[in-house]
Image (tube, rainbow, N blue to C red; front, side, top):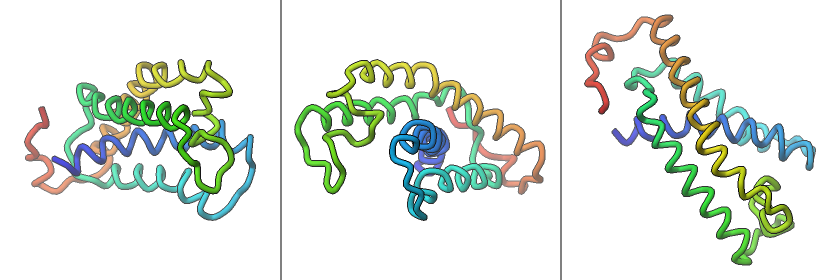
Amino acid sequence: YVLWVTENLLLSFTFFVFIGFWAIVFPVNPVLEFTVLITHGVNWVFMLIDRFLSTQPQVRMKHVYVPILYGMVYYTWSIIHAYSGLDNGPLDGKSLYPITDYTNNPVLLVSGPIAMLIFIPLVHYANQQFVRASECCLPRPRAAKEHIEMA
């Protein structure tokens, strides 16, 4: 069960990291290094491959609560981090990323709930369709067809 929840969560959020970094963060700070490629793109590709080859139970829309809960926790932490004065290590500024710089751009505070209520369900739905396509294309071991449906 823990692996299923983790895979369900990571498939959605590695996509958000991929899109968010390359569309918002990278244009502001265009430094292309190996670690940047691995942490902001390749991980999503690996998640897609893993999900395509996996025999985990299906992704269902009723399980969208998993990435939404994680998004709420991350959003809450990013607000606490931005306004508490916590150190950001070697990086400049108080925010974790430019997209979470709420102190200099309070309008960004609205982006979290919008992402959680609109984009997370859309990405989750796309993941559900991807999993359905993978189940049609790949032969599954007999045990995978006998998976107990997740509630």
